[in-house]
Structure formats: structure tokens, C-alpha cells
Length: 237
Image (cartoon, rainbow, N blue to C red; front, side, top):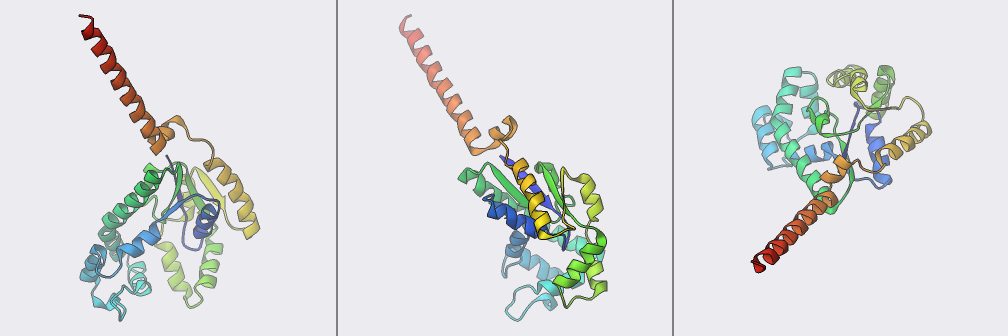
């Protein structure tokens, strides 16, 4: 199995690339979706976060007010790191089960869409690692345009709370430059898609469901042949 790591920064266009992978038939495990499930009312993650940050982060229906929680942690690095530590085990477990379900279904290539791929050290389990990159000024302008109610200071706090995209670019196997138009992005994506969809290496094949079943079938056949050979040998004694 090939697990492709996809990351970027806020307003870099990572989600657009993620959707392009989906539209081309590759399954995507989205860490943000997993995180939303982790924070669902009554869950273990929800209980931890409410205990740590109080009822002020809750909506009237008891669900977490994610924008409010974001305002609290993006302006305070210590609280942000504390929140990440609280939720990391739940999110990692959720991602593992999503990957496992896709493995059982027989998918050979999946995309792991994780904003904190490097920070969570999850890049160790993905190859290749794709970073969707834009320059800092484009990033801030796109964020302000996307979140029309956001103030520039708040937008910059959210960007500065993440690992700089230039640092992520230096750690990537593949960089998608998204400073241009959507057509430019689509053309670049096609080249990346061909790269990640190429036949599995032998190491990747043996990690796939088909590869594991091949090993099991080979071992089973070997055992059966050994038993038959041993039985024939004993019959001649």
C-alpha cells in the first residue's frame, strides 16, 4: 500500500488538491474530518477539551464552538500545544482506523490529508510527501478573502501558528506551487497524479492487502506441500 502524505497551510489550497485526488478516484483520509468527529458532543475528545477550556467554548446545543476555540488557541502558543496534546491520541486512532478500513477494501494508494503532518511526525509513515505551497502574501490575502469577517491580525496569528510553508516545502518530496490560477493548479496536479498513481514498488505491494494475501497463500501452499511430502515419506518407511 502506498500512503501519500498531503499537507500545506491555511489558505494554501490543500483542500482543493485533496478534492482533486477524490475526483480522480483516490480515497482521502482527511484529518480535519477525523478531528471533527473527535470533538463531537459526548466523545472522549469532547470531554477532555471541555474539562480543559470550560463551557465557554460550547454552543447552545453542547457542541464545541470551533471558531471560538480557534480564537483562544491561535493567540496562545501554550494553549494551542496543550490542545494538540489532548487531541493527538484520539485523532491518531481515528486516522489509523480509516486507513485500516481502506486497506481491508483493497485500495493500493490512499492520500493522508493532514495539516500537521510534519508536526505530528506522521510524515514518517507516508511516501511521497506533497506540500501545497503559496508565498506568504498570497496566503494572507486568500485567507482574508475566504474568511471575510476575519481581521488581518487574527489571520496572521492563524498563519503564524503553523509551521511556515517555506519550511514544509524544504521537507517535501513533491511541491505543488499554488500561487497561480486554478487552471495552473490543475495542470500541475495532473503531473503529480501520474506520479503517485504509478505501479507500487515491491515493498509497497507487500504492505497491500493483495500482497499480504499473496504471502499467506504462499505460506499455506508451502505448508500443504510439506505435509504431503512428509506423509509420503513416512508411508515409504
